[in-house]
Image (tube, rainbow, N blue to C red):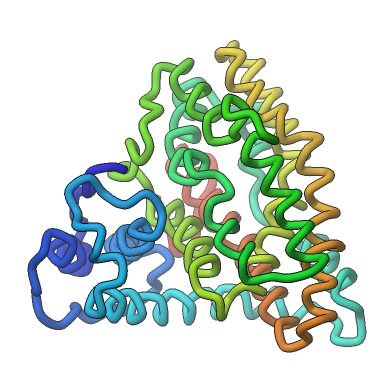
Length: 327
């Protein structure tokens, strides 16, 4: 568990008051692009965190408090609307005549987001690399947990394949090999805080949006198809970037624990890509055709949000101009 973060505006202040036991009245109006609104994203992250590790100073019964859930649903609706807007153009490139695997391949092939991994490989300095690790810690210290919510919501081949994939992510029976533990070791070796949630107050809006999207898809059974599509895109776009990030860590002479973490994903995620696309998503949609569009939404959401977060990170480093994202 972790402590509650610092509020960043009226919406997160409202949510934090609720989590401290107050009843602050109607939730403030949510407007604009919530995916780049750090106030809204922090509020939503806090609400989803109740379903993950929780907070030291929050009553665990609030996880299912009706008013807390009501506020979460309001913020979820705004977030989902923004995700649909963000992914609309990419999804229009899919040919409806293709099968699901080909459609996923199309979405992956047209990915034109900025390469944060390439920058880390060739250009990043040590401070930028550590900034990258701090931002990534928001997810990697609970790596694969959001997708694990979906295991009891599947059956047959998809369930077995997801369990196989998660078994690798969770250390293949060895607690020391938990991917979250390996990342914590990398943080500590770099002189960073490996404590779960240590850098939430530094997390940028798009970093939080990447995480809240995964949690939204994971904790809501309605969005299990999107969660698996997201997983397919996540695994399909991991292996080569991890190779580049490993090269960047070695170029900078960072502690070996950093390279060890990313090397773990080079071969594993190449295997996981096939599991996620062909053994989870394809049979899931074959059994439940109504989930087809949700799976594609999850794929597109992963790609678009990762690109949005990369543009924001590169803009912070003065390497790119990010439209709609503060530099």
